Length: 41
Image 1 (cartoon, helix red, strand yellow):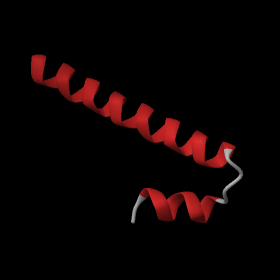
Image 2: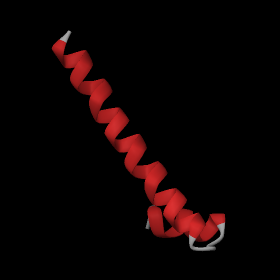
Image 3: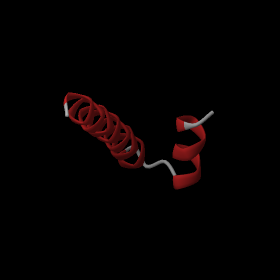
Image 4: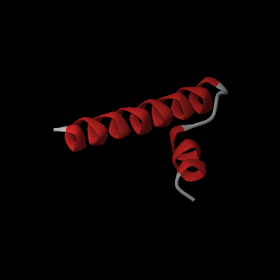
């Protein structure tokens, strides 16, 4: 059970981090392709 909770917590942290980066990038006026490029280069 602890492993499941740890995995869920890790996924949530990563998801929040990606969403934050994405909103920052889009909020700066960059295009979707640019945001994807800098995120996954």
